Image 1 (tube, helix red, strand yellow):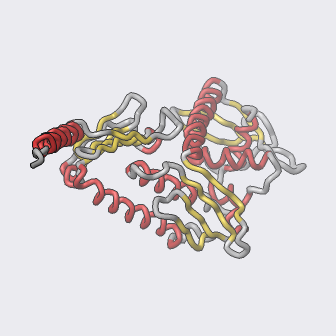
Image 2 (cartoon, helix red, strand yellow; image 1 turned 30 degrees about the vertical axis):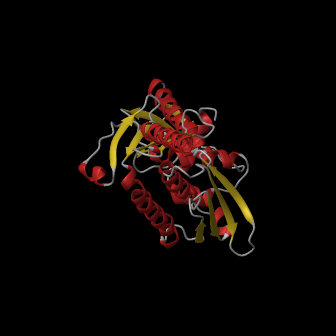
Image 3 (tube, helix red, strand yellow; image 1 turned 45 degrees about the vertical axis):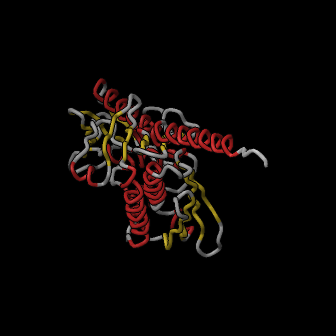
Length: 315
């Protein structure tokens, strides 16, 4: 009769079972983390995804109001937001309850769709007929009448779509955090312009700094030396003169004080610095030979004075 060898087998099973329990306990106690980040270190969108526990993600400074301190209101707590921390680079770090995160993301996706879809029903964007997008808004196509689009300010819709998509992607840990927007002629199917985000947002940051510098230069130059400036016609017209001065933070346009060929103004005019970004862009396009008179007239009644000041300062 053979001797039984079951005891060593039972012992091996017990050892393997104990080892398995140890491994499971170790994983539960120290859940692995995966960090997702893009190539832009300062403005990257980062997410720490843990198998168990909270979800942490960082929204870049370009997409938040860095001048304010974030607070977690009772409404935000209901949405699953446990904590918002402002980082040194101006970005906001969010901590979400895992159980509520997906519900929040789905709600945000629906709001983003509504935001983008509303553009086609807005009468301000007359050239745009339809906007198409994929599930995470990484690809967006704007279908528009090419000629109407180019002769309008409807390109603002590109920024609206890009920012809406980037805001959604900032909270979606699986999104690529890049957006390509193609503007396509609805009649021919030609893609006549392409804009990439967040590249466009980074450019906007540079443009914003440029605007601040131009505004400060205008204020300083005409505070230190109020003077006559002439218009800057593109054709062989005789320039008209006008006087530029500053009161407080306001730039005042009035009739010339030293030249006979003056602009005829019944009352003094104040320049609106809210017009600066668009009118400066039109000025640069005008210098390159583009016809921008329709766009400029739709924007402001003071375009000739803006152009004269830009020219006077050497832009």
